[in-house]
Image (tube, rainbow, N blue to C red; front, top):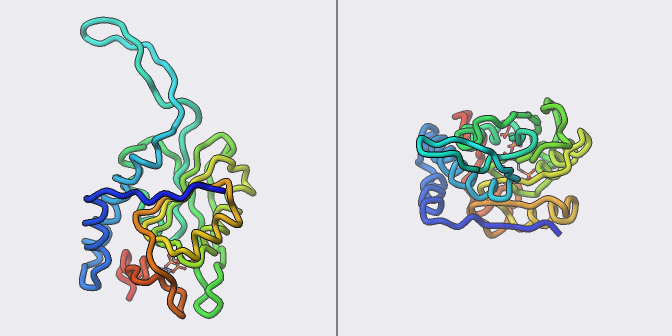
Length: 209
Ligand code: PRP
Ligand code: URA
């Protein structure tokens, strides 16, 4: 089964609490999401492969380490996942960016895919799928299926707030995919929103409500 990690750090807890508040502005919400994504990026990249590289310091020759292999791919699930890209890109500036467009049907809560554009040679890359909300898990599970159908093998999911239902679905559908989040919340409500959650992440990022 895939590992499930809550990236627990005082800065992340503090920033997430500010994001949850209903009066937090779109501008602050976006900035906080970007900052948390950068902090979580440190954790989700901890096992990227490295290789030796010969360099010369102002003093002498020595051997350092550099990240090896193909550039990682960051794949946001549109729309809300876009809010996590900038923070991750700050620490992995050479990452390639793919996009998967999914929305939840408001009645069935099932994901509907409307867009997909991924970098080439996905099978050789570490793939980091990002979406702030893991609710029923339908969107994340479908996104992983899409990435796998394009060759992706080494995949992880980075989200902000997860519901137990979504974690369970992901672990059932994709036991090979590790999940990182900033908080595991209590449950889903009757509209499949995370409780206590932070509301509709896409609307809060883009000010569409
Ligand atoms: C939200 C969120 C996830 C999905 C999570 O997107 O960003 O993609 O819901 O729900 P699930 O785990 O039950 O599938 P939404 O469908 O609202 O689209 P948006 O990002 O375009 O607002
Ligand atoms: N999508 C969101 O944006 N928020 C939730 O709580 C659930 C799904």
